[in-house]
Image (cartoon, rainbow over all chains, first blue to last red; front, side, top):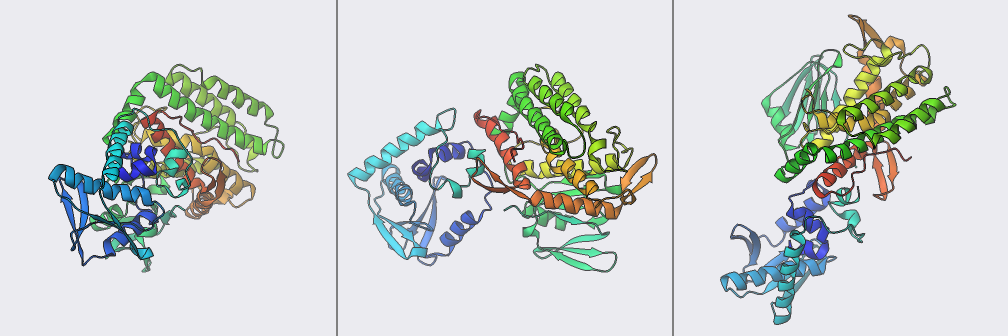
Length: 155
Length: 331
């Protein structure tokens, strides 16, 4: 949800209504593959409260794996949300690592007062979008062409 | 790019061979069919299959359409829903149950259907006959669609349009083919037989497209849900029959790829022979794969994708109220 909010609010609205289309596309398969095969011996997946699945490295850092760094802000916000959630709900303080295995790149992500504020305004924003009766207006974005919802949005 | 359909004409057995489909024909041939490369599977011959082969089709979301004696459509085995959405079904039924909303969708479907019939007549106007009065009649009927206030009236307009449209077929179709009157069960002559067969193909194409969404195929807007078939598929098929079925027939007949000898007479009716069906299906599948530039998607899409995006558009309309664009030929 957090990522969708920062990528496309219309997509977030569709997701929130369970409007799903073909998941067999190559992009999705590629993402799943990269996620499954990267760092598999040094990280473990945890399901928290049946809602949030996150990966924790042996070092204790929370990791978010992405195929590419094109949508960097949304991925970073997703990771920050996990960190915020751990701290807010469980009182656990963690740092995060944003990893792009195919680009051999890693960045560390920390919860500061400034990033905490951004997470909180994101959560409020998500609630706002999801509670609307209609999806946000159609808007052309550079990555529409590769979006799963392209055929639904523009038809 | 959507995957191709696969048709099996031989008699024999369909089974699962580890992760792939295996077809053993009575002639003693064995063929392997990679299941992940098939969009929909069509059985035209007498074929035995078991639950293991259905299981494999299920895993890969491949619908199976079964044709029986003389290729009458028998039914479909549909994979377990990959798309489950209570929301979608609730909204679809709500739209059906609200006369205003139902009419709004019905108007779009019939307008598109008439538009596409008219496009065919315009293409052949002057080429094979003078159809200007029929073209005008269809145009006028299309104008009246929006003011119909009941589903019965809407269907009456659609019926009149189809009548005017079919009346032109005798001039479009090269001799000795004539339609005279649209008749089915059984089709009374060769042209009727070919139209019936092609229409059943458009119907199965719609069934497959609807299955890829969470829409319920039994709740149609123009057709009543009481009818035996998937009424939403009948609605969608009405839009695409002129584009996918009729054009294929005109082309095959006028280029003399299909002749009277591709039919046989049976019990007061006429039916395609096996080689006739092969000819028709080959042309139909080719048409499904033809592509055109789509103005709203900014890319080339095949006719098969066009059926899919039409269904997406309907689904989006039902869920969000954004306008439904029933496919009207623009090319």
